[in-house]
Amino acid sequence: VLNRHRGRIYEQRRQVLEGEDLSGQVKLWIEEIVGDTVLQFTEEEYSEEWDLEALTNAMAALYQTEITAAELREDLPEITREALVEEFQTDARDEYEAKEAEFGSELMRELERFVVLQVVDVRWREHLENMEYLREGVHLRAMAQKDPLVEYTAEGEVMFTQLGAAIRAEVVLHLFHAELAPQEEGAPPP
Image (cartoon, rainbow, N blue to C red; front, side, top):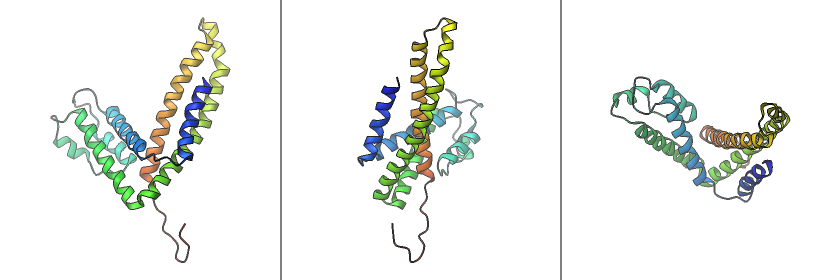
């Protein structure tokens, strides 16, 4: 199980270290994270239960959005969940493109690679520790008449899926909140 996980993580690290362009992948991650966030705060069909305040606050925490709960309420009840997802995804893409224009394309690619590498390394170490805890405790499942190997494999895959989602969410958050530090006068450019 760990060898499969290690292979996928090392493949991702190899892409980063070889300097591959991750912008397309990062943009897909942005759409995924934004879509998941909208779905988290809305139900299937429109209802009074939609927490638009919490939704706009969650989006504002993710990136600098100017979409407000009041604006969304004006479109209710005609607006659908899919329309909300699309609206926020378009807004997030525009914000990311603005950040890329501010930083420059070359610096943004470097930043993407740096952030992905840092987040993957930290989360991977945490995953290894979590898998070790799982391995130590899974033998107790034998007392419940469950095969420890099957349980370890199944839970390990769930944990690895959660690891991927956590990596994507953290990378997107860091990229949206990255800022250029003002350069000191007389200091040579990096």
